[in-house]
Length: 148
Length: 145
Image 1 (cartoon, rainbow over the protein chains, first blue to last red):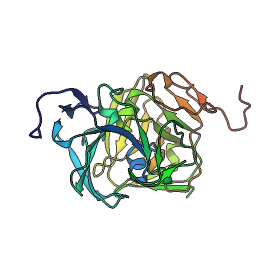
Image 2: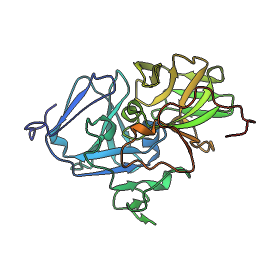
Image 3: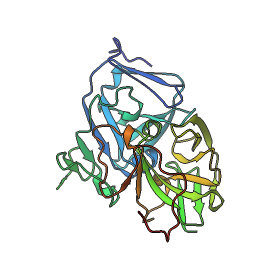
Image 4: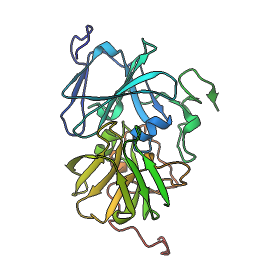
């Protein structure tokens, strides 16, 4: 599903079993960890670590399963995962439109492409969660009340 | 039941009748892949204590520990439910995110820190192992060295 802006791969990745591969034709727009409760389900009790890219620049090859839900944010999101190994691949917002695609950092071949720059949904993080004091924390989604 | 849980979409549920032998945070590369870039957090229960209801899909791979690790997940939402190492079929490595809150469990041991990315924040108060931890957790009443 190559978007119209696809011109070649700056970044590549794959799921654990290799059934799905991805190629990204843009550089990241940002990176953040999300502690919303939905993400903790999908990330085995961790926050998801997401690298943000323009959706039209991300191309997946292989079979991708999807799940559509209303997220904690109230937005309708689609989460994609590999049906062969359950590796979470991405989250994208269907409504409202125009938001960057969240590519799960674990699927990127170069996991150091952009370290997390902020934490979101820390209001639902467990007591034992660790936070880098140098990074901003938001109680809910991006732009919500900051947390000291 | 001591603990209950479910996947994100709710098609898979869990009922657990005992306490975990240990809880771990695992930074091996495979865990980072299935856990969206961070470590998996796991509570290790006796297999006999865990009842899972609902369809599961599974993927098996040769883990860095030398085990064949079979990871089971919900085919409808991809939530990973548990892992099982081939050498220890009597143990089930349950993903912490699927347990209903409040469950009071938190990671006690961190393993495979060799594979953690530079940005990883690992609680210095936790017991840490660069790779696999020793295979059998100590009895609860033993004195830690």
